[in-house]
Image 1 (cartoon, rainbow, N blue to C red):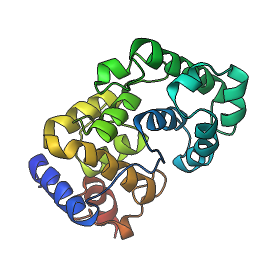
Image 2 (image 1 turned 120 degrees about the vertical axis):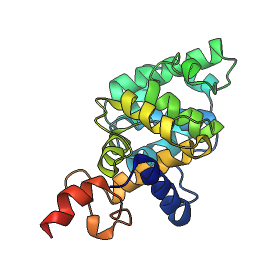
Image 3 (image 1 turned 90 degrees about the vertical axis):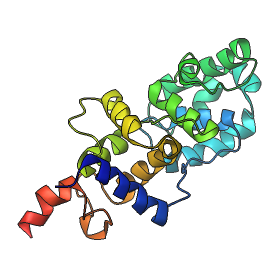
Length: 217
């Protein structure tokens, strides 16, 4: 029986060797652009977001320009993503708040980031970890699923519980990159409907594989 401590050690060891420079697949050049991209990415693929943002940033290169935009202008640029009506309101509101309350500087703290319209805890954690390398763990559907399957989390009822378990057991300097390890592994290998266990390098210590797949082979 592999202990939780050992499971985390093996997880970190594997990805440190095979994917040491893991990072977001969203295209951005500064904190403002990443903030826009992450808001757009809610229940939408990174590929789709990366198709939208070049034209968006040509029109609205910064928060001051976006803060003066009309709802119609923004909607027309992002209408191909999911929930464009809500995201349009969030983007304009975020820009106004960023300019008026934060002197046009994207904050680094999770609680401050959550004061921006359209920024929930997951989005705040993404910005804090990706831009500022803070020990923040954003838990999306991929992270939630993969962490439970591997055995890094146990019976987490919601993303916040999963986040707390992961932050508790991961070394602080690995939290921001572990977020990307879990997302990318979930996106390309440990997929929801049919995990590609035959391509996975974690099977020796993956709880899902050891309990579900191996016994039937």
